[in-house]
Image (cartoon, rainbow, N blue to C red; front, top):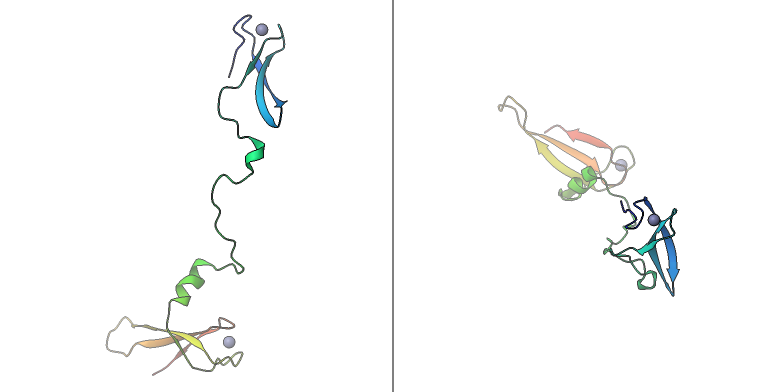
Length: 117
Ligand SMILES: [Zn+2]
Ligand SMILES: [Zn+2]
């Protein structure tokens, strides 16, 4: 917040054009005092690029899908859509005596099923 040094009134920030640049000028509505904003004002001619942006990805991949893509794939036919490639992972049952259950997830339709071994 800025105040007028001559009359103490609140200075209203207003945008003003100086040449090619837009600057912020604080103006006193009471006595007409004006003060140019001393802070950083991004010159418009520098362009809009301030921070490097990440390249927009064509497909939106959720976190879960990103995990899935790190999983190994095997050639097994999906019972739902007939796609011939599935992600595969194994889950050990709690008992420990039983064999681990092999889960598979279709790479195409994401249908998840398990194979009893
Ligand atoms: Zn003033
Ligand atoms: Zn499928």
